[in-house]
Image 1: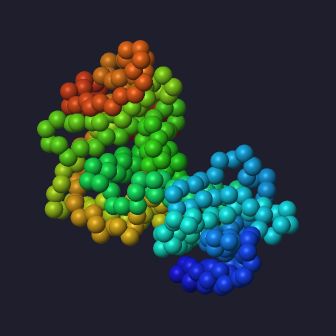
Image 2: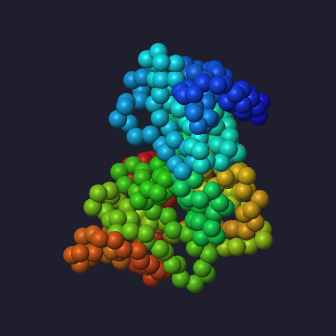
Image 3: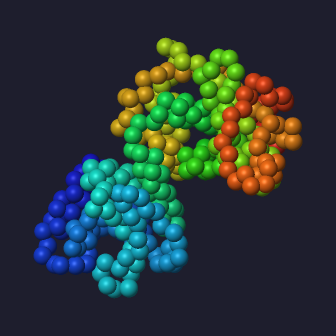
Length: 334
């Protein structure tokens, strides 16, 4: 992959020397199954781009395409021959180094499934870009201590879902928390929301909206409280991630989905050594959110209240502790 990025960087450099005043200049760089990839430069601004050719009927003109502060994705016809391409283009304000990392990641994800069909390759192309969109929205920095704990908690829940017999790809598809889903897992007929804490006494759980614990649209809804301990013999966030990667090694679809989710959650491999804290799982409590569960929703707050964030203590919430496999059975997943 390093050689391919060197090739595309060289192509960009070569194309940028053209004297044309406007439009696209492109060079074919690779083919992944039925998808053609090209390096491109858009004049007059000389913005670098990765272009991918898919069948025109796969991407409708009305489809919303990803865009962030540093890049955009658009349907283009670089050769004026009626053939539509998707162009991932660096904006003038975007970092060249970060854009190269992004292009390398997108191409690597596509090349990891060389026998995939065009629909799957399009899903990889756009899915990876949307993960970068979310990563950039979150600030391209290391995770905050709170976000680090939250991600470890979600990974612990994922492991429990795997151990209950749910296939990896299905579990990762259900994990929508990194994309700011209302709940962390939209799975089966309902959802699972995960909260994590290091607190040895009490379990403070921050609820981010009136919708997060609302069962009017999806049910059953379970809240999983993951209690962690910070200990010298535990695992760092990066070690949790590597353990997952080894667990699913060889499953190309699962590997791709995990990488997307981690990136969207704000985890960047280049920051791996920044996560020095080590955690051990102290316990998990899963409670069904029902009529007796203390919560605020749009249906029980005073008229006029449109948004709210609040905190509950899960240790003070009554309710049966449900095993992960039992929750998944209720959700119709296993």
